[in-house]
Length: 614
Image (tube, rainbow, N blue to C red):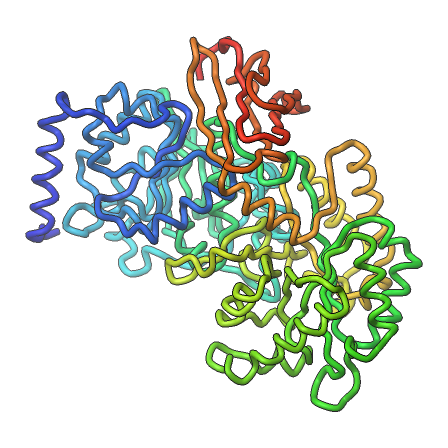
């Protein structure tokens, strides 16, 4: 428990901040209508960027607030923050003054999202004696170093209830209904799963006593709390016992995005810029065509009526071989006229045509690694040149053979006009910028993760696993309804050869998509369309103002706001009207509003005075 020299300096700073509280001026930002990411002074901005980018992609208003800024604020200003997020890793050390101030913030009506190891150390870098100082705020004892020692953090599976998984926004396929766990009159049976691995474990604190009024949303098989809601005074805390930022940095960002969106939408109730064109959810069907035998399968798909819908993203491995040079099993795009005819037919129907790796599917996919770009880059060139020659246009999409995608491939495609690529990282998410080692890998391209069905992802994998058709139908229908009801985009993928084995599943998907599209709740999307929308969306500037007790949403864009849409909670907005620019406002089935902009650089929606305070 020894306090170091640096610890004393930080403690003195905190005391000074306390003594000058009455005279400080809080930096201005949109109070009540934005979330604050509370970070330690001097935090690495590259690490902060993980959270900022997640908020940008989810359409959540989030601004960085340092501990000293928060402590200098008047109590009345602190109480007015719509919600405060204290992230993992970025803010472990904290004075008792800061933890006490946050406790008071919640008691006075504040909303707090407390993540994993946030504020678990004192200024000397030591854990509190019994449990984390904010255990009473979280509603559960955690970070109990004295009891567990080095085992204070352990790895464990994570399980949710059907209700909590849906509320948090975890898409069908990232959980599987398996062995149920009964706890406190709840059934936890939705186990978090991942593609290709039998078991998925997450690092988390061992937990102790749970307060009686704590609403547990996720736990482990041993009943360790993973996520919970807890009311304290007039406010409430969302406690997440998972290192969300670390997981995102390790290419598993689904839970960070899901919990941040949930905190903003359901917990705090803020407007959000929707991550789908016109706010209409959709699916990307990414079809990988990687060998010559797929030509017959494409004809089968045509007879099944699959190409009557779409558009889809269809990617080709263009070389003459598959496993090794000279085997002749490839598509041979350069010389095979039938292959060329299929590509042009699919292109004419509006599908996006892309590159599926480097020329020789299995040879390329099994041999590339982080250090052999000089030897294998030429195969990307061959594939790209062949596909450009047939399509007559630049190739803007890419998918990796066997999912093998070293960093140098991202660099190459970014330099050669590719705007988006398929990925098996960040499973279950929508389009996202890729992070690794606390850094944004490439600002030029969008990665679009696949959403798997548990440990498998495609029809042919389901066939090899002897998966019955019934669960596949349920998954595809549920996922289609998920994107429609959540106004979001997800991607699934397959090879032509696997589809006929699950014809009923595919038709169930198409029937559901058609029905929802007729209701204007769903659209098929291509990877390129989504990537271009997301790139344009990054340049949207928008803010929320209070105007005479009513809410005003003002947005602008350097070129056009067309297709941009906002979810506005019904509790915040009454009788909304477009008062500047072109667009529309419609009431949704859940009681919220959707404001959708049309072509133009400015867009304002004004709401009448609220019937009750937010």
